[in-house]
Length: 245
Image (cartoon, rainbow, N blue to C red; front, side, top):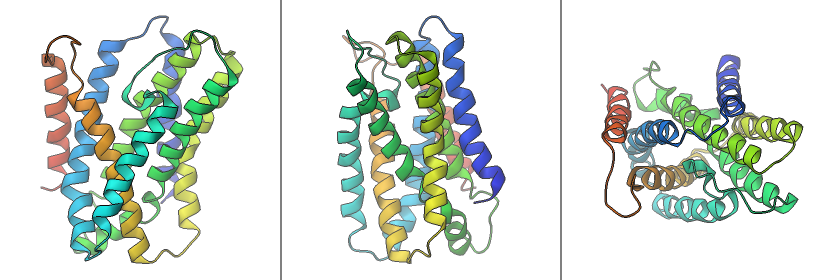
C-alpha cells in the first residue's frame, strides 16, 4: 500500500467517527441509509472480485475459510454489540468490561480486514492483465463500512457516559486497526495459498456483515424496507458493478 492509501484508510474513518460528537441525538435513519449503501457495495465487491479469485485459485479449502470467517464474525459481534451494523444499545450501567468487549470485537474485525490490503493491488493486477485502475475498490469498501461503524461506536460511548478523552482514544485505536493490519502483512512475503485463505476468511466476514445490514427490516413488526434504503442498496450495488466494466 502507498502512503496516501494509509492516510485515507485511517483519516476518513477517524473523521467520520468524530462526527458522532456533533449530534446530540442518534441519526438512525441517516445511519441506516449509509450502512445500506456500504453493505451493498461490499457485497458486490465480494461477489464480483474476491470470490471469483479465491474459488478460481484451486485452493480446496477456500470455501471452508469463507464459512470460518462468517461464523467468527458472528462470534465477534457478540462482543461488539453489533456496532458494525449501526446498532447502538447502551448498557444500563457502564463498565470497563463493556467497553473492552466492544473494542475487542471491533478491533479484531478491522485488523483482519486490513491484512489483504497489503497485497490486494498486486493480486488484482496479476489477475486482470496488468490493469490497476480499479484495484482500490476493496480499500473504498472497507472505508465506507468503517465510517458508519466508527460513528456508531462514538455515539454508543457518548450515551454510555464514557469520558470524552477515552472516547477519542477508542476512536483512534479503531481507526488505526485496518492500517495496522495492512502494515503488519506488508512486512512479510506471503505465499499465495495463505493470501487465498486470508481473503476467503475476509469474504466470510464481509458476507455476514453485508447480509445482516441488507436484510434488517425498517419495521420490527412488518417485512418493510423504506424506499431510501432500497435506493441506497441499488446505488451501492451499482457502484460495485461499475468496477468490473
